[in-house]
Image (cartoon, rainbow, N blue to C red; front, side):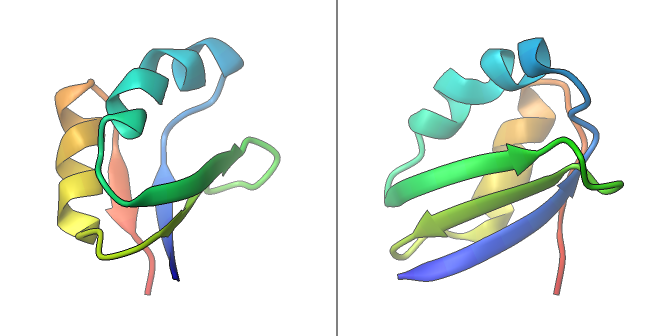
Length: 70
């Protein structure tokens, strides 16, 4: 299990609700959450064999900014 961490521009619960089906469609995710209290609106994903780029593309296609943090 690995933890992927991303900076996003998700600011509101309704935006998280909008991207939920997109994230849930990605294969290999065990659990995920968004920390709206963090200044970078951190998306954390616990996964097995998931490409960070696929997460970035998925959120960008849904209309949001997403960038992996190293």
